[in-house]
Length: 232
Image (cartoon, rainbow, N blue to C red):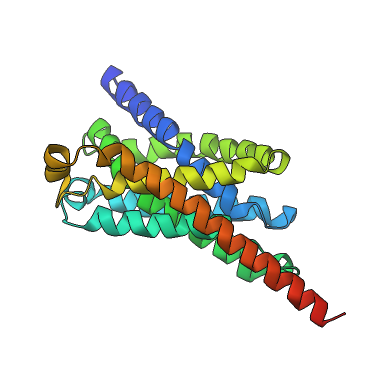
């Protein structure tokens, strides 16, 4: 018989997924914003389905993963590059019609970014689940539709207010900066000797994500115009 402890743990898992899933909703929205409307839902569903599978697999190694030296540093740099690409990888004229190529690219971005950003989240979920994978699966199955709805809402806001695209990329950079200084190999040293990096690193990575992403987007725009002039 399912008791109070089960429901309390399930509620904790759902709450953790939703509260920490706001960042994932931003990534999903950014990854899908250049797709044709008919493909946006498909990319979201397939991307989130793949991300859930990866997250469940990571759950088995949650506590040991975060103790691996330099893992979070590598993940942070990878996430930074994803943020730059999401902001600077504006589709050239005609690229948005390349159905499968662009669709699969969005799905891949969602899965990889979710896996990287979930390194910290899964520890909280694993603790709440007390090694009960059925609880984990049930909690994720409840929270995923909410995160999907959130990503649709964020996508609508980005279409209406393009400045949110830049803000979303900056948020990804901020998260990568936070991860960068929390690696198991040097986290204690950073806290003891260079504590200011705990706020300076997120700020700098967020700024770099926006600046480099905007620069890449402007270059792609120039290349797109030059390509269009060649065919006139």
